[in-house]
Length: 403
Image 1 (cartoon, rainbow, N blue to C red):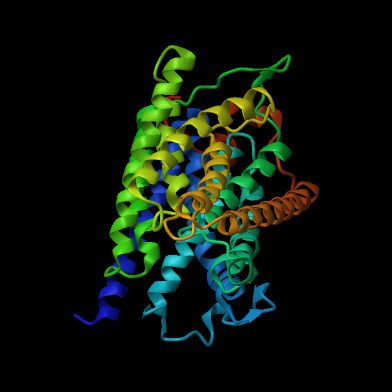
Image 2 (cartoon, rainbow, N blue to C red):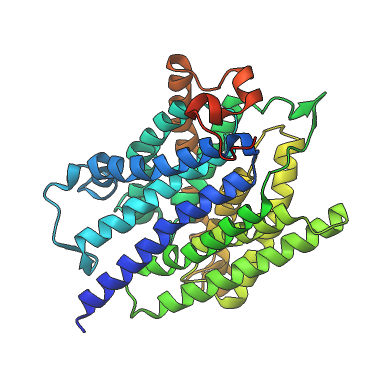
């Protein structure tokens, strides 16, 4: 079979895997939050896909992969006009499909961190900006020929920073600006607000893990490359190591293996290996996963109790903290130029610079976006709406009709 046809078919399949991740995000967020907001969360996740792909089609792709201007931004191919027949050895249509689903994935991370108290259309407005400006701009610097990759030498294989950390940084700003849920803190002490359906959350994590085998291995765009199978294995074992690490640490700290933290542990390991899945060894992937699981749990506790930032699903810790760690780990553990493989500080320095710039810009743009939303249509629902739940008031229906 012709190599281009084979690779096009592979990336199309991988794109469908990544598309399914939106079902995983929805189930995780629904399971980890209260039943009275389940429809609202489903709506946000569902609409994110639609807004994401359309926004990326009209503007986002051009800014990310259009002709580079000074290493800063793409300048053509808006609404895909003038696009080539093929890119990177595969059909252009399939390349766009793959990239559009990635854009929507970045935006949906913010949904969970701001769940249960954010206006629906306020989130929609942010989603538009995230998929047309924030993600494509930083994505251009990393993958579209921009200065982070071409000048700095920054590496991010499948989006540890471009997708996950950027989403986590935006989620951090959003959670701070919308404020904690009513009743979350009493005299400065956090109160647990348990998710209503942990089995649903577990199903979501398993769907996400499944989708990650398109997210990471698919990023080679080449089924014949040894890096594809390598990325699949590192994705598998990093997620497994993080799950075990989070389970053990939660048992040590709290006297029981916490289900929610264990589930988030798996996601932490998957996020952690994303930036280097193609270039970190199997043993390195286990190390990345184990450390990611530990970091996630410590970050959840610190963000909740010390910073007093309310993140109902742990999105900031899973995607932001572990996305940063995994990207920096490339500078140490990459078999091609990593510190432990004789590469010196060159790659690690590039990773630090890349993460720093991406974090600063993502948080800055998110802040400006949320300020604009807050000043116009408002960001937070009324206290009475939050008390009764967003489902009935914002959508006119409950997820569970006996409630």
